[in-house]
Image (cartoon, rainbow, N blue to C red):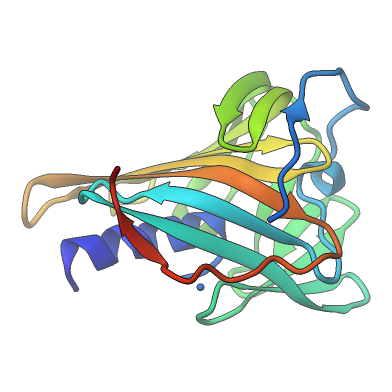
Length: 204
């Protein structure tokens, strides 16, 4: 696998698999954060991201909810789908029997995450600037601890979803560090998000 492909798959694993309409962000205090409002899931929901793979090329990445069956949701990025279940405790990954987001949403809370990593809530007051806008009162979750050297920092904002995903991985064979950053360009709940004409574009 090439360095660029490895970088891209690192991001896909972080957001939901290996696959808009924009608003102006949110700075107003909202209700208490919960797994459900940190990652809203519904039929037709979609998010688009500007992705810096660290290889000199930028990409546009789209994740969308393509099917809903009760509290089970299928999210696709153009490749193998990822399934989530909404449970009273949080957002569950049935394939790995781990949690994506789990209550209570408090700094220092931890739970077993995907691929042997541990997820920890690092902040409940994060502020981020992304192409879609400025967001305050967000929750940052850090996944780390696996022998593969991968660390994933995901910032979720209420009633929007994942706004910023920052992933790093040490490649022991080559001694290089992969660094992939995805920033929310836009999101749409219930409306179509068109696929880009060009997925890959050189840095401007």
